[in-house]
Image (cartoon, rainbow, N blue to C red; front, side):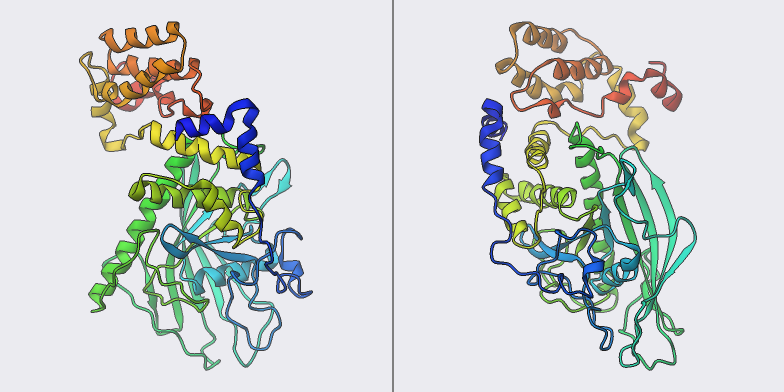
Length: 450
Protein backbone atom coordinates (compact mmCIF):
# COMPACT_ATOMS: atom_id res chain seq x y z
CA UNK A 1 0.00 0.00 0.00
CA UNK A 2 2.69 2.62 0.82
CA UNK A 3 4.39 1.96 -2.53
CA UNK A 4 1.08 2.21 -4.38
CA UNK A 5 0.25 5.51 -2.70
CA UNK A 6 3.74 6.84 -3.45
CA UNK A 7 3.16 6.01 -7.12
CA UNK A 8 -0.21 7.81 -7.13
CA UNK A 9 1.39 10.89 -5.56
CA UNK A 10 4.45 10.96 -7.82
CA UNK A 11 4.87 13.75 -10.37
CA UNK A 12 2.62 16.13 -8.54
CA UNK A 13 -0.10 13.55 -7.93
CA UNK A 14 -1.12 13.22 -11.58
CA UNK A 15 -2.25 9.61 -11.24
CA UNK A 16 -4.15 10.39 -8.03
CA UNK A 17 -5.99 13.20 -9.79
CA UNK A 18 -6.78 11.01 -12.79
CA UNK A 19 -8.09 8.23 -10.55
CA UNK A 20 -10.34 10.63 -8.67
CA UNK A 21 -11.62 12.32 -11.82
CA UNK A 22 -12.53 8.94 -13.33
CA UNK A 23 -15.11 8.35 -10.58
CA UNK A 24 -18.64 8.79 -11.85
CA UNK A 25 -21.57 10.19 -9.92
CA UNK A 26 -25.00 8.66 -10.28
CA UNK A 27 -25.20 8.28 -14.05
CA UNK A 28 -28.83 7.70 -15.01
CA UNK A 29 -30.15 7.91 -11.45
CA UNK A 30 -33.20 9.98 -10.54
CA UNK A 31 -34.13 12.25 -7.61
CA UNK A 32 -37.73 13.13 -8.36
CA UNK A 33 -38.89 13.08 -4.74
CA UNK A 34 -36.13 15.45 -3.66
CA UNK A 35 -37.24 17.91 -6.34
CA UNK A 36 -40.90 17.95 -5.37
CA UNK A 37 -41.94 21.45 -4.36
CA UNK A 38 -43.08 20.22 -0.94
CA UNK A 39 -39.67 18.64 -0.30
CA UNK A 40 -37.25 21.28 -1.60
CA UNK A 41 -37.22 23.27 1.68
CA UNK A 42 -36.04 20.08 3.42
CA UNK A 43 -32.77 20.05 1.43
CA UNK A 44 -29.94 22.02 3.02
CA UNK A 45 -28.21 22.39 -0.34
CA UNK A 46 -30.12 22.50 -3.62
CA UNK A 47 -27.60 20.32 -5.48
CA UNK A 48 -27.22 17.64 -2.79
CA UNK A 49 -30.28 15.45 -3.19
CA UNK A 50 -31.45 11.99 -2.22
CA UNK A 51 -31.56 9.47 -5.06
CA UNK A 52 -34.96 7.83 -5.39
CA UNK A 53 -33.72 4.24 -5.47
CA UNK A 54 -31.71 4.43 -2.23
CA UNK A 55 -33.48 7.12 -0.22
CA UNK A 56 -34.69 6.41 3.29
CA UNK A 57 -38.50 6.36 3.38
CA UNK A 58 -40.11 7.65 6.53
CA UNK A 59 -43.49 6.27 7.50
CA UNK A 60 -46.28 8.14 5.78
CA UNK A 61 -48.27 10.52 8.01
CA UNK A 62 -51.81 10.00 6.78
CA UNK A 63 -52.32 11.76 3.47
CA UNK A 64 -49.73 14.48 4.11
CA UNK A 65 -47.77 14.94 0.88
CA UNK A 66 -44.01 14.54 1.25
CA UNK A 67 -44.19 13.27 4.82
CA UNK A 68 -42.13 10.21 3.85
CA UNK A 69 -39.18 12.31 2.59
CA UNK A 70 -35.88 13.09 4.27
CA UNK A 71 -32.59 13.95 2.59
CA UNK A 72 -30.91 10.65 3.45
CA UNK A 73 -29.69 7.57 1.61
CA UNK A 74 -28.75 4.03 2.56
CA UNK A 75 -25.09 3.18 1.97
CA UNK A 76 -23.78 -0.38 1.84
CA UNK A 77 -20.92 -1.43 4.11
CA UNK A 78 -18.47 -4.30 4.06
CA UNK A 79 -20.50 -7.43 3.29
CA UNK A 80 -23.62 -5.74 4.64
CA UNK A 81 -26.30 -3.92 2.71
CA UNK A 82 -27.61 -0.66 4.15
CA UNK A 83 -25.04 -0.59 6.93
CA UNK A 84 -25.12 3.21 7.02
CA UNK A 85 -27.46 6.10 6.43
CA UNK A 86 -25.73 9.15 4.95
CA UNK A 87 -27.69 12.32 5.58
CA UNK A 88 -27.32 16.08 5.72
CA UNK A 89 -26.99 18.10 8.90
CA UNK A 90 -30.58 18.53 10.10
CA UNK A 91 -32.39 21.83 9.55
CA UNK A 92 -34.78 23.23 12.18
CA UNK A 93 -37.69 22.22 9.97
CA UNK A 94 -36.35 18.65 9.70
CA UNK A 95 -35.46 18.00 13.36
CA UNK A 96 -38.65 16.00 13.81
CA UNK A 97 -38.03 13.97 10.66
CA UNK A 98 -34.44 13.27 11.73
CA UNK A 99 -35.45 11.82 15.09
CA UNK A 100 -38.29 9.95 13.43
CA UNK A 101 -35.73 8.38 11.10
CA UNK A 102 -33.50 7.45 14.05
CA UNK A 103 -36.45 5.71 15.68
CA UNK A 104 -37.98 4.03 12.65
CA UNK A 105 -34.65 2.74 11.34
CA UNK A 106 -33.74 1.53 14.82
CA UNK A 107 -30.45 3.38 14.81
CA UNK A 108 -28.49 3.47 18.04
CA UNK A 109 -25.39 5.35 16.86
CA UNK A 110 -25.15 8.79 15.24
CA UNK A 111 -21.82 10.02 13.85
CA UNK A 112 -21.49 13.79 13.36
CA UNK A 113 -18.48 14.88 11.29
CA UNK A 114 -18.81 18.65 11.61
CA UNK A 115 -19.04 21.41 14.16
CA UNK A 116 -22.21 23.47 14.32
CA UNK A 117 -20.40 26.50 12.91
CA UNK A 118 -17.25 26.75 10.84
CA UNK A 119 -15.79 29.92 9.34
CA UNK A 120 -18.69 31.87 10.88
CA UNK A 121 -21.17 29.83 8.84
CA UNK A 122 -23.82 27.46 10.15
CA UNK A 123 -22.90 23.96 9.01
CA UNK A 124 -25.48 22.09 11.05
CA UNK A 125 -28.29 23.23 13.31
CA UNK A 126 -28.29 21.82 16.83
CA UNK A 127 -30.90 19.08 16.79
CA UNK A 128 -30.44 18.01 20.41
CA UNK A 129 -30.98 19.73 23.77
CA UNK A 130 -28.09 21.66 25.30
CA UNK A 131 -29.30 20.32 28.65
CA UNK A 132 -32.42 18.61 29.88
CA UNK A 133 -35.17 17.72 27.44
CA UNK A 134 -36.40 18.87 24.03
CA UNK A 135 -39.63 17.70 22.42
CA UNK A 136 -40.12 17.35 18.67
CA UNK A 137 -43.54 17.21 17.05
CA UNK A 138 -44.72 17.10 13.46
CA UNK A 139 -46.03 20.25 11.84
CA UNK A 140 -48.50 18.03 10.00
CA UNK A 141 -51.10 15.88 11.70
CA UNK A 142 -53.57 13.41 10.30
CA UNK A 143 -56.52 11.68 11.92
CA UNK A 144 -55.91 8.67 9.70
CA UNK A 145 -52.39 8.03 10.97
CA UNK A 146 -51.46 10.42 13.81
CA UNK A 147 -47.82 11.41 14.06
CA UNK A 148 -46.10 10.47 17.33
CA UNK A 149 -44.14 12.92 19.44
CA UNK A 150 -40.44 12.42 20.15
CA UNK A 151 -38.72 13.51 23.34
CA UNK A 152 -34.92 13.69 23.51
CA UNK A 153 -33.17 13.85 26.87
CA UNK A 154 -29.46 14.62 27.14
CA UNK A 155 -28.18 12.13 29.73
CA UNK A 156 -24.45 12.68 29.50
CA UNK A 157 -21.76 14.60 27.60
CA UNK A 158 -18.11 13.51 27.58
CA UNK A 159 -15.59 15.74 25.82
CA UNK A 160 -12.31 14.30 24.58
CA UNK A 161 -9.36 15.71 22.66
CA UNK A 162 -10.76 14.92 19.23
CA UNK A 163 -14.43 14.20 19.74
CA UNK A 164 -17.46 14.59 21.98
CA UNK A 165 -19.66 11.66 23.02
CA UNK A 166 -23.25 12.40 23.97
CA UNK A 167 -25.78 9.97 25.34
CA UNK A 168 -29.47 10.59 24.73
CA UNK A 169 -32.67 8.91 25.76
CA UNK A 170 -35.07 8.97 22.82
CA UNK A 171 -38.74 8.51 23.66
CA UNK A 172 -41.67 8.08 21.32
CA UNK A 173 -45.00 9.13 22.76
CA UNK A 174 -48.48 8.55 21.41
CA UNK A 175 -51.77 10.22 22.09
CA UNK A 176 -53.60 7.57 24.17
CA UNK A 177 -56.89 8.71 22.59
CA UNK A 178 -55.68 8.30 19.03
CA UNK A 179 -56.31 4.57 18.89
CA UNK A 180 -52.86 4.08 17.43
CA UNK A 181 -51.35 0.71 18.34
CA UNK A 182 -47.84 0.51 19.71
CA UNK A 183 -45.29 -1.77 18.15
CA UNK A 184 -44.32 -4.19 20.96
CA UNK A 185 -40.81 -3.62 22.28
CA UNK A 186 -38.75 -5.52 24.80
CA UNK A 187 -36.99 -4.26 27.87
CA UNK A 188 -34.12 -5.91 29.69
CA UNK A 189 -33.59 -4.31 33.08
CA UNK A 190 -30.20 -6.01 33.44
CA UNK A 191 -28.61 -3.78 30.80
CA UNK A 192 -28.07 -0.05 30.48
CA UNK A 193 -29.66 -0.16 27.06
CA UNK A 194 -33.29 0.79 27.68
CA UNK A 195 -35.56 -0.34 24.91
CA UNK A 196 -39.11 -0.80 26.08
CA UNK A 197 -42.75 0.17 26.18
CA UNK A 198 -44.53 1.53 29.22
CA UNK A 199 -48.25 1.32 30.03
CA UNK A 200 -48.53 5.08 29.45
CA UNK A 201 -47.79 4.66 25.75
CA UNK A 202 -44.14 5.70 25.88
CA UNK A 203 -41.35 3.77 24.18
CA UNK A 204 -37.72 4.63 24.81
CA UNK A 205 -34.18 3.69 23.86
CA UNK A 206 -30.67 5.00 24.39
CA UNK A 207 -28.81 6.72 21.56
CA UNK A 208 -25.08 7.47 21.29
CA UNK A 209 -23.87 10.47 19.30
CA UNK A 210 -20.19 10.78 18.37
CA UNK A 211 -19.15 14.24 17.17
CA UNK A 212 -15.69 14.44 15.59
CA UNK A 213 -14.32 17.91 16.36
CA UNK A 214 -10.79 17.70 14.91
CA UNK A 215 -11.63 18.19 11.24
CA UNK A 216 -10.22 21.63 10.28
CA UNK A 217 -12.29 24.40 8.72
CA UNK A 218 -10.23 24.06 5.55
CA UNK A 219 -9.05 20.90 3.83
CA UNK A 220 -8.45 17.69 5.73
CA UNK A 221 -6.82 16.75 9.06
CA UNK A 222 -3.02 17.02 9.22
CA UNK A 223 -2.78 13.58 10.80
CA UNK A 224 -4.85 10.45 10.38
CA UNK A 225 -4.44 9.02 13.87
CA UNK A 226 -7.12 11.12 15.62
CA UNK A 227 -9.72 10.01 13.08
CA UNK A 228 -8.60 6.39 13.32
CA UNK A 229 -8.90 6.49 17.10
CA UNK A 230 -12.34 8.07 16.75
CA UNK A 231 -13.53 5.35 14.37
CA UNK A 232 -12.17 2.62 16.62
CA UNK A 233 -14.14 4.08 19.51
CA UNK A 234 -17.33 4.17 17.42
CA UNK A 235 -16.72 0.54 16.45
CA UNK A 236 -16.26 -0.50 20.08
CA UNK A 237 -19.47 1.15 21.24
CA UNK A 238 -21.40 -0.20 18.28
CA UNK A 239 -20.22 -3.73 19.05
CA UNK A 240 -21.18 -3.28 22.71
CA UNK A 241 -24.70 -2.16 21.78
CA UNK A 242 -25.10 -5.08 19.39
CA UNK A 243 -23.98 -7.48 22.13
CA UNK A 244 -26.54 -6.01 24.52
CA UNK A 245 -29.32 -6.39 21.97
CA UNK A 246 -28.33 -9.99 21.29
CA UNK A 247 -28.31 -10.76 25.01
CA UNK A 248 -31.73 -9.17 25.31
CA UNK A 249 -33.07 -11.37 22.53
CA UNK A 250 -31.65 -14.49 24.15
CA UNK A 251 -33.19 -13.50 27.48
CA UNK A 252 -36.54 -13.30 25.73
CA UNK A 253 -36.16 -16.72 24.12
CA UNK A 254 -35.35 -15.51 20.61
CA UNK A 255 -32.64 -17.09 18.50
CA UNK A 256 -29.82 -15.08 16.97
CA UNK A 257 -29.24 -15.93 13.35
CA UNK A 258 -25.84 -15.81 11.75
CA UNK A 259 -24.90 -12.30 10.75
CA UNK A 260 -22.49 -11.26 8.01
CA UNK A 261 -19.37 -9.30 8.76
CA UNK A 262 -19.81 -5.60 9.14
CA UNK A 263 -21.31 -3.11 11.49
CA UNK A 264 -24.21 -5.17 12.80
CA UNK A 265 -26.97 -7.60 11.98
CA UNK A 266 -28.01 -7.49 8.33
CA UNK A 267 -31.71 -6.84 8.67
CA UNK A 268 -32.23 -3.80 6.51
CA UNK A 269 -33.57 -5.35 3.34
CA UNK A 270 -36.56 -3.02 3.07
CA UNK A 271 -37.45 0.56 3.87
CA UNK A 272 -39.92 -0.44 6.56
CA UNK A 273 -39.35 0.46 10.23
CA UNK A 274 -37.11 -2.04 11.98
CA UNK A 275 -37.97 -4.22 14.99
CA UNK A 276 -36.91 -2.58 18.24
CA UNK A 277 -34.86 -5.62 19.26
CA UNK A 278 -32.51 -5.28 16.25
CA UNK A 279 -29.74 -2.81 15.47
CA UNK A 280 -30.22 -0.59 12.46
CA UNK A 281 -27.77 1.42 10.36
CA UNK A 282 -25.18 3.83 11.69
CA UNK A 283 -26.41 7.33 10.84
CA UNK A 284 -23.60 9.56 9.56
CA UNK A 285 -23.85 13.26 8.73
CA UNK A 286 -21.72 16.34 8.28
CA UNK A 287 -23.22 19.45 6.67
CA UNK A 288 -24.19 18.26 3.20
CA UNK A 289 -23.79 14.60 4.09
CA UNK A 290 -21.42 13.77 1.24
CA UNK A 291 -17.82 14.92 1.89
CA UNK A 292 -16.70 14.08 5.41
CA UNK A 293 -19.63 11.69 5.70
CA UNK A 294 -18.32 9.77 2.71
CA UNK A 295 -14.80 9.79 4.14
CA UNK A 296 -15.98 8.30 7.43
CA UNK A 297 -17.98 5.55 5.74
CA UNK A 298 -15.13 4.57 3.41
CA UNK A 299 -12.62 4.39 6.27
CA UNK A 300 -14.98 2.55 8.62
CA UNK A 301 -16.07 -0.04 6.07
CA UNK A 302 -12.61 -0.56 4.55
CA UNK A 303 -11.01 -0.98 7.98
CA UNK A 304 -13.45 -3.87 8.41
CA UNK A 305 -12.35 -5.27 5.05
CA UNK A 306 -8.70 -4.80 6.03
CA UNK A 307 -9.23 -6.88 9.17
CA UNK A 308 -10.73 -9.76 7.21
CA UNK A 309 -9.06 -9.63 3.79
CA UNK A 310 -5.80 -7.73 4.42
CA UNK A 311 -6.65 -5.43 1.51
CA UNK A 312 -8.58 -2.24 0.80
CA UNK A 313 -10.45 -0.92 -2.23
CA UNK A 314 -10.81 2.84 -1.88
CA UNK A 315 -11.61 3.49 -5.53
CA UNK A 316 -14.29 0.82 -5.67
CA UNK A 317 -15.79 1.84 -2.33
CA UNK A 318 -16.18 5.49 -3.36
CA UNK A 319 -17.57 4.47 -6.74
CA UNK A 320 -20.22 2.25 -5.19
CA UNK A 321 -21.20 4.93 -2.67
CA UNK A 322 -21.69 7.46 -5.45
CA UNK A 323 -24.33 5.20 -6.92
CA UNK A 324 -26.26 5.49 -3.66
CA UNK A 325 -25.76 9.21 -2.85
CA UNK A 326 -24.33 11.94 -5.04
CA UNK A 327 -20.93 13.61 -4.53
CA UNK A 328 -19.75 11.16 -1.85
CA UNK A 329 -16.13 12.05 -0.99
CA UNK A 330 -16.51 15.52 -2.38
CA UNK A 331 -12.96 16.63 -3.21
CA UNK A 332 -9.70 15.21 -4.50
CA UNK A 333 -8.06 16.31 -1.24
CA UNK A 334 -10.50 14.17 0.74
CA UNK A 335 -9.87 11.27 -1.62
CA UNK A 336 -6.10 11.57 -1.17
CA UNK A 337 -6.57 11.75 2.59
CA UNK A 338 -8.31 8.36 2.50
CA UNK A 339 -5.14 6.79 1.14
CA UNK A 340 -3.04 8.55 3.78
CA UNK A 341 -5.32 7.18 6.49
CA UNK A 342 -4.83 3.59 5.37
CA UNK A 343 -1.09 3.99 4.95
CA UNK A 344 -0.97 5.10 8.57
CA UNK A 345 -3.39 2.36 9.63
CA UNK A 346 -1.11 -0.36 8.25
CA UNK A 347 2.19 1.32 9.17
CA UNK A 348 1.79 2.77 12.64
CA UNK A 349 0.49 0.67 15.50
CA UNK A 350 -2.03 2.02 17.96
CA UNK A 351 -0.63 4.46 20.52
CA UNK A 352 -3.51 4.53 22.99
CA UNK A 353 -2.91 3.67 26.64
CA UNK A 354 -5.82 2.93 28.96
CA UNK A 355 -6.17 5.13 32.03
CA UNK A 356 -5.73 2.24 34.47
CA UNK A 357 -2.62 1.09 32.62
CA UNK A 358 -0.97 4.49 32.31
CA UNK A 359 1.17 4.22 35.45
CA UNK A 360 2.68 0.86 34.45
CA UNK A 361 3.15 2.11 30.89
CA UNK A 362 5.24 5.07 32.10
CA UNK A 363 7.25 2.81 34.43
CA UNK A 364 8.14 0.56 31.49
CA UNK A 365 9.03 3.55 29.33
CA UNK A 366 11.55 4.69 31.94
CA UNK A 367 13.43 1.40 31.72
CA UNK A 368 16.65 1.43 29.66
CA UNK A 369 16.31 -2.21 28.63
CA UNK A 370 14.63 -2.96 25.26
CA UNK A 371 10.95 -2.12 25.57
CA UNK A 372 7.75 -2.92 23.79
CA UNK A 373 8.05 0.47 22.15
CA UNK A 374 11.38 -0.57 20.64
CA UNK A 375 9.79 -3.69 19.20
CA UNK A 376 6.74 -1.73 18.07
CA UNK A 377 8.67 0.96 16.19
CA UNK A 378 11.78 -0.93 15.09
CA UNK A 379 10.24 -2.21 11.88
CA UNK A 380 8.93 1.23 11.05
CA UNK A 381 12.29 2.85 11.81
CA UNK A 382 14.06 0.23 9.69
CA UNK A 383 11.72 1.10 6.87
CA UNK A 384 13.22 4.57 6.87
CA UNK A 385 16.55 3.18 5.71
CA UNK A 386 15.28 2.82 2.17
CA UNK A 387 13.72 6.25 1.97
CA UNK A 388 15.85 8.69 3.98
CA UNK A 389 19.32 10.13 3.81
CA UNK A 390 22.31 8.33 5.30
CA UNK A 391 22.50 10.91 8.05
CA UNK A 392 18.94 10.30 9.19
CA UNK A 393 19.34 6.53 9.00
CA UNK A 394 22.51 6.64 11.06
CA UNK A 395 20.76 8.77 13.63
CA UNK A 396 17.94 6.26 13.78
CA UNK A 397 20.32 3.33 14.28
CA UNK A 398 22.12 5.17 17.07
CA UNK A 399 18.82 5.80 18.82
CA UNK A 400 17.82 2.16 18.62
CA UNK A 401 21.16 1.00 19.99
CA UNK A 402 22.00 3.70 22.49
CA UNK A 403 20.31 2.15 25.53
CA UNK A 404 17.99 5.08 26.02
CA UNK A 405 14.91 4.69 28.16
CA UNK A 406 11.65 3.92 26.43
CA UNK A 407 10.43 7.41 27.29
CA UNK A 408 13.44 9.01 25.59
CA UNK A 409 13.11 6.64 22.66
CA UNK A 410 9.44 7.40 22.15
CA UNK A 411 10.19 11.11 22.28
CA UNK A 412 13.03 10.82 19.76
CA UNK A 413 11.28 8.42 17.41
CA UNK A 414 8.59 11.06 16.88
CA UNK A 415 11.28 13.47 15.69
CA UNK A 416 12.85 10.80 13.51
CA UNK A 417 9.55 10.45 11.72
CA UNK A 418 9.01 14.19 11.61
CA UNK A 419 12.42 14.97 10.10
CA UNK A 420 12.33 12.08 7.64
CA UNK A 421 10.60 12.26 4.30
CA UNK A 422 8.29 9.30 3.92
CA UNK A 423 7.58 8.74 0.22
CA UNK A 424 3.88 8.75 1.04
CA UNK A 425 3.53 12.03 2.89
CA UNK A 426 3.62 13.66 6.28
CA UNK A 427 0.58 11.92 7.71
CA UNK A 428 2.75 9.05 8.93
CA UNK A 429 4.36 10.73 11.93
CA UNK A 430 3.22 8.57 14.85
CA UNK A 431 0.83 10.50 17.00
CA UNK A 432 0.14 9.85 20.63
CA UNK A 433 3.75 10.77 21.49
CA UNK A 434 2.94 14.45 21.82
CA UNK A 435 1.75 14.00 25.40
CA UNK A 436 5.09 12.46 26.29
CA UNK A 437 6.82 15.71 25.35
CA UNK A 438 4.91 17.42 28.14
CA UNK A 439 6.83 15.84 31.01
CA UNK A 440 5.00 17.92 33.58
CA UNK A 441 1.71 16.36 32.52
CA UNK A 442 2.96 12.85 33.25
CA UNK A 443 4.59 13.97 36.48
CA UNK A 444 1.33 15.48 37.70
CA UNK A 445 -0.83 12.65 36.44
CA UNK A 446 1.20 9.64 37.54
CA UNK A 447 3.30 10.94 40.41
CA UNK A 448 6.44 9.90 38.52
CA UNK A 449 9.22 12.42 37.97
CA UNK A 450 10.09 12.45 34.28
